[in-house]
Structures are given as C-alpha cells and as structure tokens.
Image (tube, rainbow, N blue to C red; front, side, top):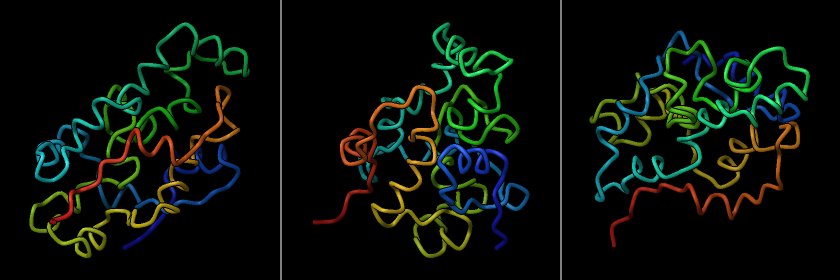
Amino acid sequence: MKLAFPPAAVLAMILSGGVAVATVEAQEYKYIGVEACGKCHKTAKIGNQLAVWEQSKHSKAYATLQTPQADSIALATGLATKAAESETCLGCHTTAGPDAGVKPDEGIGCERCHNPGSGYKGLSVMKDRAKSIEAGMRDMGSPETIETMCRTCHNEKSPSFKAFNFAERWEEIKHLRPTAP
C-alpha cells in the first residue's frame, strides 16, 4: 500500500505546525462519502455511528463556511475568496478538501479520519479489523492517534481557534463500536 499526503492533508499539516498523520493516496483508494458509510453504520448493534456524526458539529462544518461571519474571518486573514471557496478553509471544513470527489456539504465525514473507504467498505473486510487496515482504513486504535488526527485542524493556526480540550471534545463525537459483555 502506497502512502502519501494529498493536498488537504498537506494543508492540515501546515496549519497544525507540521503534525504528520499518514493518509492513503487518493489514486489508490477513492472517497465514497458519508451516505455510503452510513448504510452499514446506522444500527445500535454497531454503535449507530451515523447518528452520532449527524448530530455533531463535524456534519455541519461546511455550513459554517457559508455564513457572513466566516466570510469576515476569511477577509480579515487576507483570503481573497469567500470562506466556502477557499482551499485554506475547505482543508479543515470538509472531508478531503475541494478536489476529492466528496460533496463538501457533508462537512467533515467519516473518511476524514478513517481514510478513503473504497478499499475497506465491503462487509467481509469491515468484519476483520486487520483486513480493514490492510485495505486502507486508518488505524485509530489509541487515544493519542485520535488526538493527533483531531489536532490537524483543531489548533492555534485556525483563525477562529478556541482552546481544545481533547478529552471533552472526544466525549461529544466518539462513536465506538459496542463491545460484547
């Protein structure tokens, strides 16, 4: 499996002060979008991840760029375009930036953290964690890995940054698969 940093990841690394988070090369795996992921990730049996995402600020991240306030921030930071048209803003407010083939209005979708899903979307692959990772899914197995991923956007380089308490924010967005008793 080839690893590379697509434009959105490079932008995120720049904004985060160089924190590198490996992202699967876009040519090898394709983004499939939240709708495709949600077909399987919507039942209580596996944690209803779709509903958690739908209620999160991540699902509305692109919509925040379409506000007059966002345009004011973009103008104040020297951007020549509206926030919703700026690659700088789109890099953190969408799944994969402006050119990945994912609708920007889905905001920050599943594949932002878990990598493009075309390689691991099949049920037979998803049932096996090792196979999923081998097929391109990012291993998010530790809190440190998750926090590093979050901080690629939630950092002081953002013009609207507010203190980021990972433990508190993770409680708002965590979408773990239930474990058997």
